[in-house]
Image (cartoon, rainbow, N blue to C red; front, side, top):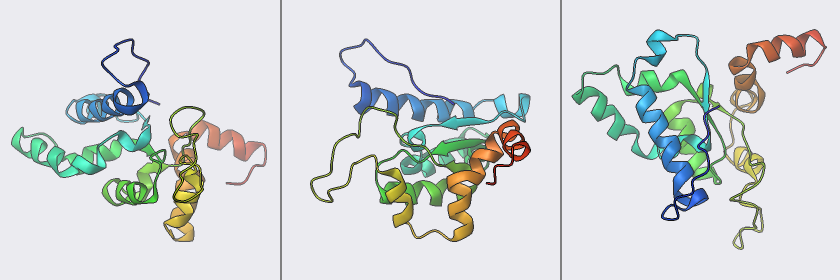
Amino acid sequence: MIHASSTRNPALHLNGSHYIAQHYAAVVELCSSNVFEDLPTLRLIVPHGGGGIPFHFNRNRALHVAESLPPFEEVVRNLYFDTAVYDADSLEMLIRKIGVDNVLFGSEMFGTAKTRDAETGRFFDDILGDVEALGLSTEDRAKLLTGNALKAFPRAAKHLSLVGVQS
């Protein structure tokens, strides 16, 4: 997993701008590089839906065309993105832009969203509630909640099957 580290720069809000900007930058740089040609079996997970990637998807498509790079919409699918985006609308856009096959369930351990939304009464980081609000097909829901993680971690999938855990 790629996750930005802390910053001591007082000009950057750690949870508000620093992490999200670094996740976005990592995706842009990885997709503009040869890393997936050099390491075709590399599996990386980008947290928080890749920062602004879904919102600037066509910007990156345009840059790839202008710079004669492989199509962004293809190369970005070498990455997995987690669901920790804190609302169903953003999650729906992530799935629409990236594709359900490259999105996997991820939630907060601690941090930004441990407060309640006064409008809904739910915690902001109730990611499972956001997933359920999307009305995904049974197949897509299974991919997002377990299947894609097992695809990203084949050794874990093998171990789980050996100990009798069903996905």
